[in-house]
Amino acid sequence: MPPDIQTLLRQLGVNLQEFEGQDFHSYSPIDGALLASLRIDSGKQIEQKLERAELAARQWRQVPAPRRGELIRLFGEELRQHKTQLGELVTLEAGKILQEGLGEVQEMIDICDFAVGLSRQLYGLTIASERPGHRMMEVWHPLGVVGVISAFNFPVAVWAWNAALAFVCGNAVVWKPSEKTPLTALATQALFLKAMMHFNAQNNATQGIDAPVGLAELIIGEREAGAQMVADHRVALVSATGSTRMGRQVAEVCARRLTRTILELGGNNAMIVAPSADQEMAIRAITFSAVGTAGQRCTTLRRLFVHDSIYDTLVPRLKKVYSSLPIGNPLDKTTLVGPLIDRAAFDGMQAAIVAAQKEQGVVTGGERVTPTNTAAAYYVRPCLIEMPTQTEQMHHEVFAPIMYIVRYSDLAQAIAWNNAVPQGLSSSIFTTDLREAELFLSDVGSDCGIANVNIGPSGAEIGGAFGGEKDTGGGRESGSDAWKAYMRRSTNTVNYSHALPLAQGISFDI
Ligand code: UN1
Image (tube, rainbow, N blue to C red; front, side, top):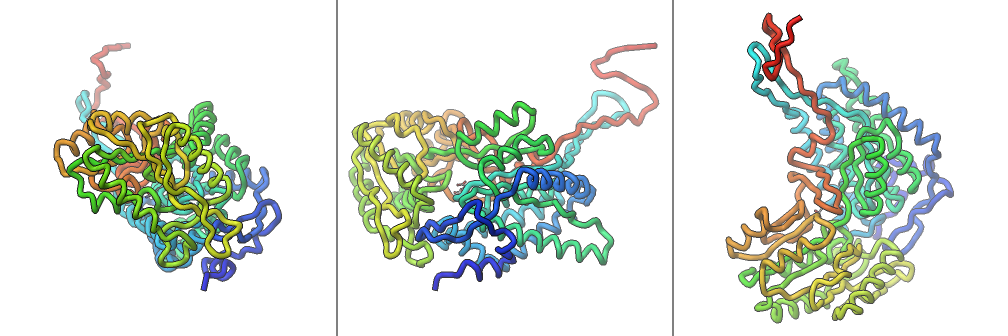
C-alpha cells in the first residue's frame, strides 16, 4: 500500500490546511499526481520572518552552547521516531528510492549527533603574545541569522547539515527550500518545532532560557522569495545548494553587501579505473554513483575514464548491469532507479544525449520507460555514452543519469581530464597501486573538494567537510571544522601587567 500523503503529514505533525492555497502546486515525480496546493509567503510575511529570526538570534546566543546542543539532541530524537514517515515523504516528493529516502533522514540524525558533540567543542585558541604580561586568544561567537537555500534532490538533509551546526553555534536559521519539495520542508519544520517545545518544557523546571519563537523560520515561495532573503541585511551568512547559475547570483548579491556565503553548487564528478582495479568493486561503485538517485545528486558520477587494457572487459560488463537495472516506482523494494524530478529534467537529458552524439558519442540506453500508471511521470533507462575523448559537452553538468566513458592510456592524461572541467566537487580512482592512489590524492592530483580511492564519488559521510572548488562554489558544510563558517572569530589581547608595551617595538611616549 503506498503511504497516503495526508496521513503521513499528520503523523509528522503538519496540519496541511494551515498552508493550503492556490499559489503553487506540489506534484509527485512518481506518477505526476498532485500532492498539495499551497500558499506562498508574501514579501511582507518574509520580512516578518526575518525580523522574528533576528530577535530570536539575539536571545539564543545567550544560551550556553552545550544547552543549545540539547535542543539538537531532542530534534535528533524526533527524527529517529519519525524516520520512516519522513523517509517515505522524501520518496513521494523527490522520487528517490525508499532506501535513499531513509538514508537521507539518517544523514540528518548523524549530523544532529555530530552537532551535539560539537556543542561542547567550539574551541578557540590561545596564542603566544610577543609582549610581557599579555595573553592573546581567539574566541568564536554566533553570527546572527543564517539563511539556507536547499535543492530538491536532498530536500531535508542539506538543511540539516547547515541548521544543526548553525543552531549549536548560536544562530537562528531561515530556510528557503526548493519549490519542488515544500512538504518535506513543512514536515521537518514541524518536527523541529516539536523539539523546541520539549526543550522549553525542560526549561520550566530549570529556569533556563527558552528556544525563542523565530529560531527556525521557513519561507514557502519561489525564486523571488529566496532573492528577498539573500538581499536582506539581517542575514549574516547565506548557505546555498543548487545550480552554479543560482550560486553566482547569490554570490553577487552577497558580495555587494559584503556578506558571507557557503556555496555548494554543480558537480561533474569523475572516476578513473586503473589497470590494477578490483573490477567487481568498481562496477558496483560505478553503478551506485552513476544511477543512484536517478543521477540527480551533485556528487553523481558523470565521467568515467577507463584504462585501455581493461576497457573491453569492464565496459561490456557495465552495459550488462545497466540493461537489467530495475527502474520503476521508488516505493517498491526492488527498484534501484526511480523517476526524474520533472519533464524539464527529462528534456535536458535528451538534449544532452543529442549533443553528445554530435560529438561522436555512442549511446547505450537513455530512453524513456513508462512503468504502469506513470504516463505523467518521467522514468528513463540510465545512459552510458562512449566518447572518443573528453569533449565540450562533457564540461556541463546535466542533472540526469548520463555517464560519459572515455578510454585512457596515461594516468597523467586521465588526471588532467578529471581536472579540466569547470566544476570541482568530487572525484575518485579505483586502483590497488599505491603510487597511483597517492598521486591522485597529492597536490598534483585531483583538484576537487572530495577525492576518494576505491570508493565512488557520491555518498559522502557527514563527518567530513563537504563541498568543492571552482564552479562548485568553494564552500564547506557538514563535518570537520565547517562549523567555523557559522561563527565569527574574535581575537582578544589582555594586558595583565602594569606597563603598556606596544607591539612591533614601537615607542610612543607622551
Ligand atoms: C547533494 O547532492 O546535494 O555525498 C548532496 C552524497 C550525499 C550528499 C549529496 N551525502 O552523495
